[in-house]
Image 1 (spheres, protein in one colour):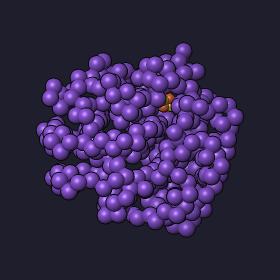
Image 2 (cartoon, rainbow, N blue to C red):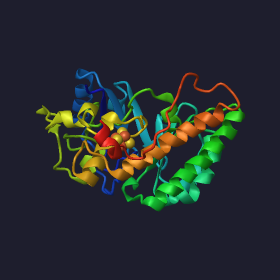
Image 3 (cartoon, rainbow, N blue to C red):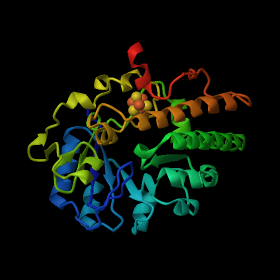
Image 4 (cartoon, rainbow, N blue to C red):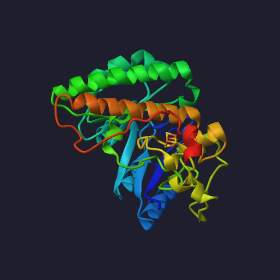
Length: 318
Ligand code: SF4
């Protein structure tokens, strides 16, 4: 069932996930389209997430946005200081900006990074982790991981786990998606684009998620006039994902856009996405064991030891 409507307010709205937004020419959502989108969200009882561009919006757009409950996703580079202060999610695209970031407890932070930047700079994350309530790391090139990268990622997660322990000992308990989400989950908590969320673009058309719009505007799944028209909608659901439905890397984004890009099927993940998610899962398991050496930690939570990093290897057992 749909729960979320993501509204891209402009063609230059910030990316907050794996995809790149290469559009540089502003194309603001027309005010009537924005109002119709908000009406659609209200009629369908959806929680609306507005994704902002870096430039300031006209006042009538700001007024329309405030007519409904919503959350705001804003880049750290946004020129509108008032908006940045009011944002629910702040997206960093650069490690240097993150290191100068001023963090507030009522916000979540996202850092989009390539794997190589992550390997080079991850040790500088400890400072930010001591100040945030939640930091999400988004790897923008998961599909490029190779065996050497997997080994590096495992080592980075192990070091970050030690950093988290040090921070816990200071009495703080920040969330870092790649290490702590799995500790808090008892079932799959994926992105669920096309199943639980849908995106409205400035052109008045719906897309499975922003990545589908920025990849190909012709790839729409309906519009505000005709309504949603998602072909083979069941394929976006977990129970029609033959590999994922057997998996317990509950924190995995299970990105359907990455799936389609890498395997040509929205419900079939790439080897890289699965191994990265399992390295995180296993690092969460190790973090749990380490944290319990000095105190009560996620009482009752257990993460089993497993002997694979890609569930595809286990398909004959299902
Ligand atoms: S790790 Fe792989 S199988 Fe598991 S949820 Fe993620 S994409 Fe699906």
